[in-house]
Image 1 (spheres, rainbow, N blue to C red):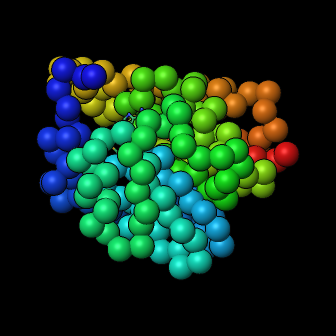
Image 2: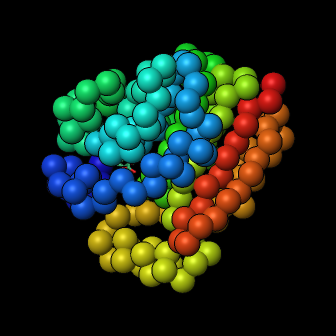
Image 3: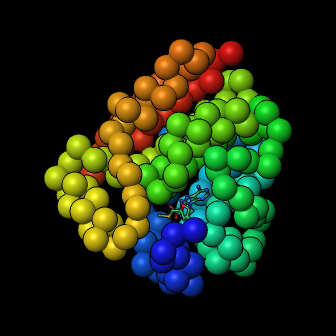
Length: 189
Ligand SMILES: C[S@@+](CC[C@H](N)C(=O)[O-])C[C@H]1O[C@@H](n2cnc3c(N)ncnc32)[C@H](O)[C@@H]1O
């Protein structure tokens, strides 16, 4: 249990503070639309999920923070699950798409988190991990600020995220824009 539950405190204001300006980027990265299940892993309030605009897919937001998940429950069309991403309550190969935005640096075990997202991804499916790009000066300052705020964040580079999937039947692409990086993992088996 963290000393301070930052996300529990900020949950009611989260969407207003962070907004949703990258809808087109998320849609393209996820190759929307498609028909099936999409998991927004550590999806918080559903800030991102609510805008994905995928009429034939069911979006499930999974997050460890009860207060963040409560905000998701107020949004039409989204299902929510309070769970840690390191141990998801879903069967193997159940999602066509898995998305994680701005959360990998917050989880306790990044390797286990990535492997768990891979486990629930269907063969032929796509996993998109968006992270602040720690190789930029701005994000180095952000990392310092999060340390000062006792957030226990642990930023890793896009290449290190990609390396977690080494040896798996995956095609991996990294894109960067401004201070953000996207690691896109296609499951090929
Ligand atoms: C910066 S917020 C991002 C939320 C959402 N993805 C977005 O972009 O709006 C990080 C989220 O990660 C969640 N989180 C952190 N560690 C987690 C874990 N191990 N399992 C599930 N959720 C976790 C927090 O509760 C929080 O909602």
